[in-house]
Length: 387
Image (cartoon, rainbow, N blue to C red; front, side, top):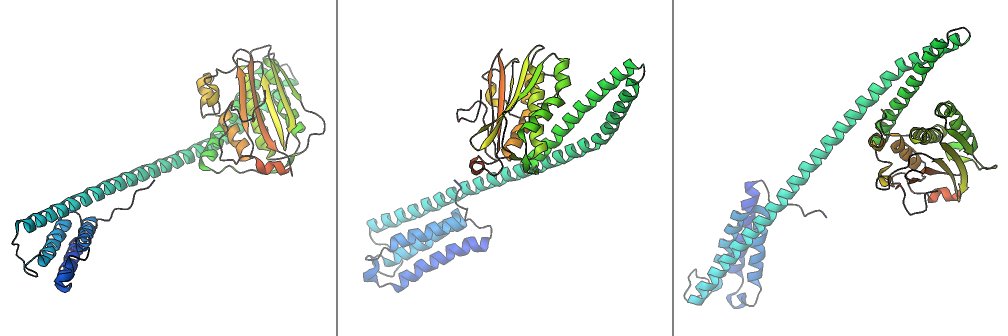
């Protein structure tokens, strides 16, 4: 809840002018109101309001000036009327109490306004710090994007030449050359994935991720994603397969981005599944959405860490394998940009299952999916996860 704005003016003319105007009003009332009516009007309350207004606008000293002038107006009504003289001890005590009340009101007004000013200054300082942090973050993201973009071209050249070397050596006796070229090719692909993760993270932070939505086939995406990692799975003696029922409806999605989500989940499963394990990539219909899942027989995730599985850099904390820990973070952002949900279930020593949803093209249920800005929680109890 925001605090009311401070009213103390920085201009001495306004500060003391308000006090003088309040005193003039008090004296004018004392001069114009008939003596017989003075005690019948709530003039003392009006004087208190004038004192508070002076302290609110000008601070302590203008409030004290208004207090003195209002006291003079009050004395003007005490017998003998319209004479600045006090005859009875009770009148003297009353005037002293009025002066003390005015001084207390002035001090209170000064204290309140100073606290409001301090709060406003603190809030402005925090806003400036937040703006500076946002500016630094944008500069960091811009530099990161430039560096990643500049590195992609030489990596592309290395990748192309490695592929040419492998192709040329395959026809001759250069088996060793072919093997080394394949190593270079895999390394460049891994570096390209890292660079893409950096670029995607910069886009997510800046809110600049855009989608090219069109109707797409879930079964075709499964086949392409699994075939792209078949060699990696074979090299680790892991059984990688895909399952999809016939007649799956088309999805409304950015095909490349959903393929990127599947790739991130499959790469993650390959990373944490030991040799001899199994990975199943599935797709099916659930309500008005297509639900994908990637299930492995890997190491599993500790229950205490499962709620943070989609945090930025979490993968780096799980295993120091040279990755950036951005794959699941990026997958979550892409799925939410499609108005889908993503989640995970896992048992330590038994494996993990990651699932996400994509709207069916033209389905009315797609509009009921949560917005891209809503968080997706791992292992939540809202029915968004599959075993």
